[in-house]
Length: 146
Image 1 (spheres, one colour):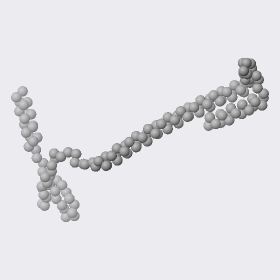
Image 2: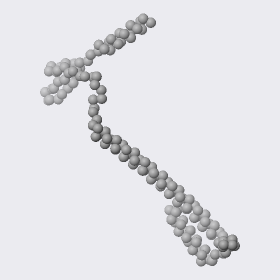
Image 3: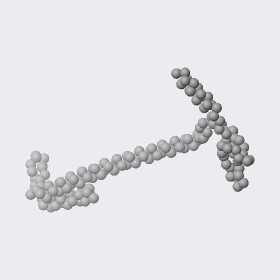
Image 4: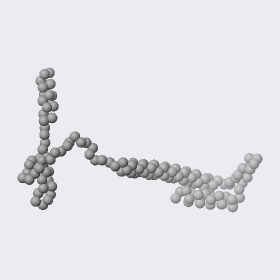
């Protein structure tokens, strides 16, 4: 147990004793270089590593960023709503298409078509009325099914 305590203490002491030197120099072409070993005309730099978050964000910049993010979120919500509306419209058109096709098949199969009057009696429709209703259904099929 004592050995573990000694090892931990040595590690802590060695971590605080570590010291890295950074050197800065300019070469003949005027390019600035940094390194951990001294060169002819290099100068030792004092680097403060205790500072964190050295990038300062302006309040206005942060507000603009926030507005942009909100704008993106609004756009995404609007697109989702439009997609949902489009899906509903497409589904409604498909349902109308199926209903119109089904009704046309019924009209074409039936020997005669009739309506019910106020007393609930069957009143047969004329051939002109039947042709008009059939053409109306074909127009609906062209409208809803394409």
